[in-house]
Length: 228
Ligand code: ADP
Ligand code: ADP
Image (cartoon, rainbow, N blue to C red):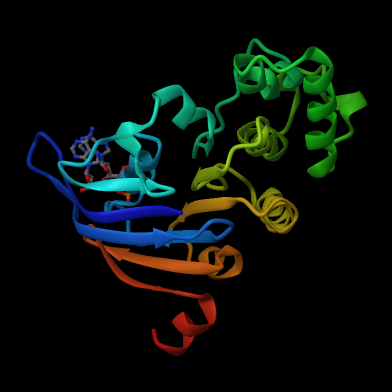
């Protein structure tokens, strides 16, 4: 479970990004964070993997303050898919996916097996794709790699910050489909940032509506439609 308890975040220049922010995300849930630009979505995400620290209040994962985790242990257990496609350009697709498993000292054989399995999950033939360089893939394919790279070492939590923003509508639809089926298959806790309401409703078990650094409403999509 991820839990924000009365978190405040004020940046050094005085900007208040989160105000008395509390939120609970259960294990295995996909929660979408939605709200206008600047409402604090990215700040919220980055507090989960400790890229940003609260000014006051705390963030807990499984009832332990994120500050009390070993930073490597914490980050290795949290996959992060960025808004911009961010594959390492000089590495093959296989090498890109293998980065965290290698840091965790997985056996070569297990890594190879995992890479094939992940490529198959998103409909990319490993025989064709694993030896390619990122530049030899379309934008949509690259972002699919971005998603499976975040899953590679089997993290408990996956953070996705507008992973579709750089994609054309068709790739976007394909990847939305992939994420829904991945979620069913792997039952991970996923926090997904978007500013697109259709996307938030389509993907989220729960939708967390944010405004000015606060939670306005958090509900399953159905209830959110009934009580806008
Ligand atoms: P998005 O809305 O796509 O999440 P960003 O996370 O890049 O966009 O930025 C959100 C808002 O935060 C924008 O208004 C941006 O100008 C502002 N912002 C980002 N970084 C800084 C910074 N270092 N200093 C001041 N404002 C920033
Ligand atoms: P969102 O992801 O919802 O667009 P952010 O979490 O990026 O929102 O930003 C929340 C608020 O904090 C915005 O007002 C933004 O301008 C501000 N902000 C974000 N990063 C910084 C920063 N590094 N320094 C100062 N202000 C920032």
